[in-house]
View 1 (cartoon, rainbow, N blue to C red):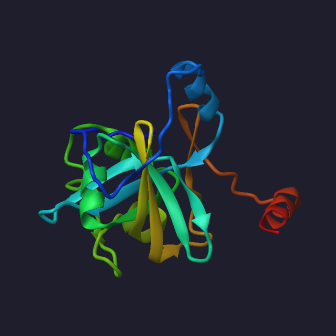
View 2: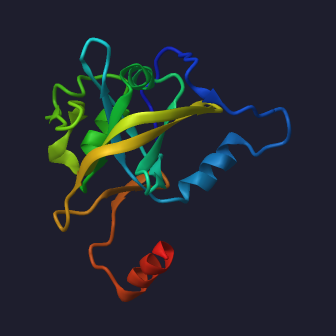
View 3: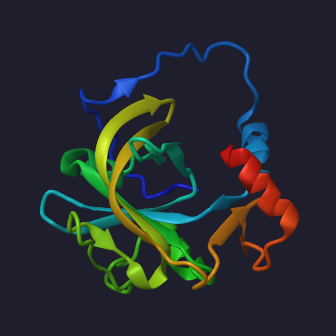
Length: 200
């Protein structure tokens, strides 16, 4: 889920993955159905354009990359005007939506409407980029560390310079097979064991 497409952009600072896509590969519908089985959190990626106007879009392709240094990634459509603004600004904020954030997600996934006119936001403490605090269970304020163009999307790598994560306040908004949901509120011993094993 990643929308808000505008004019195509080119930026010589963006690395590109060379891949010959003329060979055999699955149909788009098969690929989408496979990826839809992966439940994800829902975030709104925000930045400021060259005139200082807030820009943002809904994105479910966000994950951690490295702990030392703290890096994360977000994947944006190559045609996105938000991507163009991020590359020019050199930074972005990942606003991880909380439960009951479907309206905000849908608003920032749409191609029209005054997104920031109806969504309260304030400048983040570290970079001054848009932070939609009221609707976020967490936020990561990022300096753009790199960008890689891969197919029709660009992978943004952000160095996290500041952020917050609310504990016990609410649960995150989830997305699975084109439907919203929430994370189970009650932890169990089995899931805790899996987490500890994964963390080594």
